[in-house]
Image (cartoon, rainbow, N blue to C red):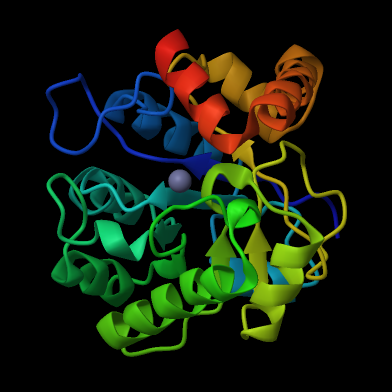
Length: 254
Ligand SMILES: [Zn+2]
């Protein structure tokens, strides 16, 4: 079995004025992304789709690559770099963002799917699911899924939690609506490949060096411990300030 590292990317942007939605923390430089992929290939890793990794019994070299939000750089920059190396990735799209400036259009999503990439939901509005009542929670999960199914013409059964906010209630709601693969953003290596809980993911940020990236994928050394400590430290202001207050604090600090 072994661990299953799941990398979490957002957009790939050279600089603030690059096409797409630049984020000072999460926008990874395209050249660094290419170097990270080369390193994965050199190490003998494979990047299958989630479905294949979870159903295979001997995928000890598997690494899952994921992208959240639906930035236009997903199709323009990430997809060609992945295809050149025979790698696949899962793209989690927030459906109300589709067609907005800097975001994927329906044709882009179809192109990703037609090129062997996975498509999943990242909510309809990117609201933090833990803030919603049951009706709104259901609408977020169901509307986004139906829209993506219409666009791709195939079933959508994976979900990446917007903002990483959610627990047991959100998990059960998603499962009841037919989602089978549920990804959170608690950092960790997924020591066991379970489908009855939120899968852990490893956030890849702009300032991550290639050495730190390697240590993160193999979940060893300082970057892994630092990642967990940072996540634990941020959980407190999230609880105290609520999601809105936390978001405003984050925007000010950045
Ligand atoms: Zn997101």
